[in-house]
Length: 203
View 1 (cartoon, rainbow, N blue to C red):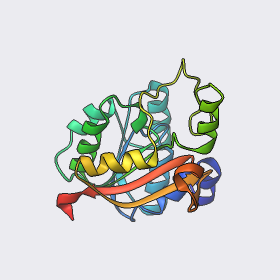
View 2 (cartoon, rainbow, N blue to C red; view 1 turned 180 degrees about the horizontal axis):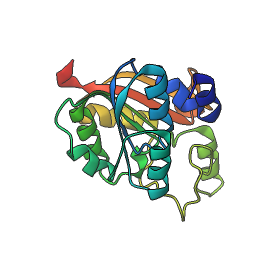
View 3 (cartoon, rainbow, N blue to C red; view 1 turned 135 degrees about the horizontal axis):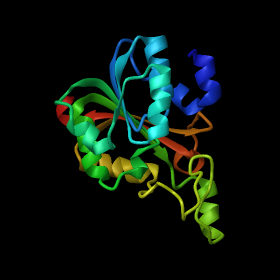
């Protein structure tokens, strides 16, 4: 898979991919159909594993030639020793976890660095939906309230505070909208938050 194809399919993944160094050992938690790992393997000579629970997505990973472990994210993390990977990805999946603090600590334990993305609940369209009396539905939050897999909602500021609480050093924080960075009022105009971080003890 080439960059242009990835960008057309998932512009957010294309942006995030530039943070992953060539030949990195990668763990992709909640890897979905394996699109990101397929790109990193083909274009950046990365090696690694995906962790995914959904049967259909597991099959898609196998068809893409992606090594995948069928586990939930926390069980998948527990399988690996400290600093087993150069980078751990958890892209648009953290909001589905019941134990977010524990998951973040596990991510920082097994990876020398990590990249996490999640829908920004403070995005202006989400705020308008709440003011109108409805739960938000958008590209970054595509589910209705009654069938969503999401169990946690966060804003950019909330996540930054949590990262500090659990001992993470934020290396970069970017707000994206449709895959493009938002610099002006990011916590209002960005629909997706992306954080790159590591343990403070690793600094």
